[in-house]
Image 1 (tube, rainbow, N blue to C red):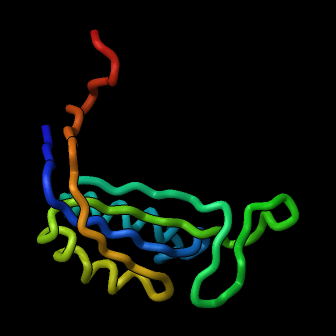
Image 2 (cartoon, helix red, strand yellow):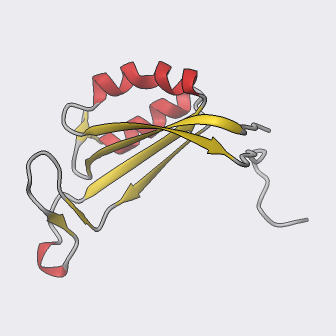
Length: 120
């Protein structure tokens, strides 16, 4: 069981949902590399509207369903481990924004593989 509590570093990577790395969604490549690197956690969040350096507004409104919606990939671990992962992001993220925030983890306990959330 993995545990992480106390001071940590959060990396939030803002990219477009259609960004790719070798024909694979970029957000998926980031999550899989973070997993291989042993980071404590990674999650992907799809935005409903936003804009970045291009100043183009991307939205999920019905008339604009084909727009390249914003995606945020959030990684959390110790400062040392997240900073050690930054060279991977340098390689992967050609267009986007990477933000680092100090944070405090109150509780993180990984589940054992094959175990559900409910009690047996």
